[in-house]
Length: 210
Ligand code: SF4
Image 1: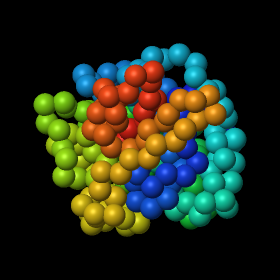
Image 2: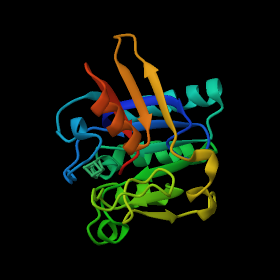
Image 3: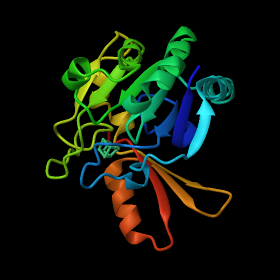
Image 4: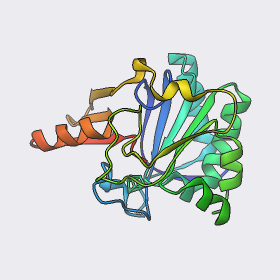
């Protein structure tokens, strides 16, 4: 069990990886790519502090309620909180759920400079999407990625490269009206950016950029 600092989460989404998924965004990113869709997640400030145990309980409840097939970790930078996420990921896989993890680091960098918990998180990740967001190399062809440099690594045989271009997942975006009246947009970083530019008064967006 370990403490996680979450910027946001949704219990069931169909735009952050294959199938229905529980998605969570960690707070704090040291990479801070220019043009990132989630700049409000850069700061290492307390957001929602919660034990990994409790997060796993939310995920099981989402599985029972929505029939999710897996979880997706985004950021912020998930690898900075790899200890807690590895605990969640391990239990998810043991329960039959798949794990997809986004990181702004490359896999090579992570293997050379493992942050605490990273090796275990990689061991319990089925699909890793790696690399920073490069705004001068936008990628509108592949599902979920923001830029052409980002790569898919299939670390288990749960999924294969066919998901990258599967049209069922193309450019998905979901809008949710929250109880405080704000609009939460989840999904394609390009659609989120364009909605942000058009909306006055604020749309909170969580994207799968990295
Ligand atoms: S794209 Fe990902 S790695 Fe880059 S600043 Fe945003 S959250 Fe961090």
